[in-house]
Length: 140
Image 1: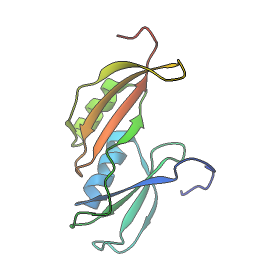
Image 2 (image 1 turned 90 degrees about the vertical axis):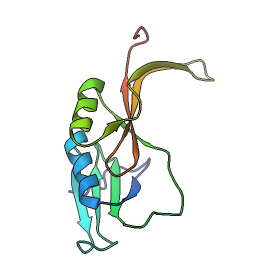
Image 3 (image 1 turned 180 degrees about the vertical axis):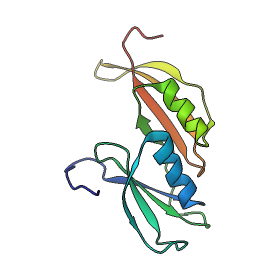
Image 4 (image 1 turned 180 degrees about the horizontal axis):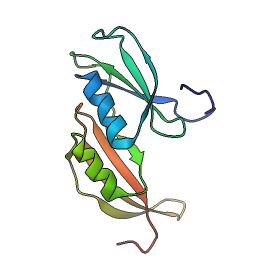
């Protein structure tokens, strides 16, 4: 169910992919996304899904045989609490590995250090998905 509970932050990221159902099923099966809204006519360019990736973080997906030329985002990052399981599940659902997971300790200008494990996958729709897992400062 579509919810208006989230009041701030990003409402959604929109993807245009060659195959709407393949892309939607990838996010549903690999990342447990939920369809919260669907509209438009099957097979038409106005057919879209809104998927909730968790806590109101929406991904809107349109199917379009033509490339979308207004711009390009580099990737969408999805948080996970188990990198290895998330990689396996994504690959089992059609993703390919762009990079293997790695741990990084990134110093910020404020002096804080961000500790994360991350990796990149190529989703079946052609988009790049980064997975991020928070790790402890002593992780290697």
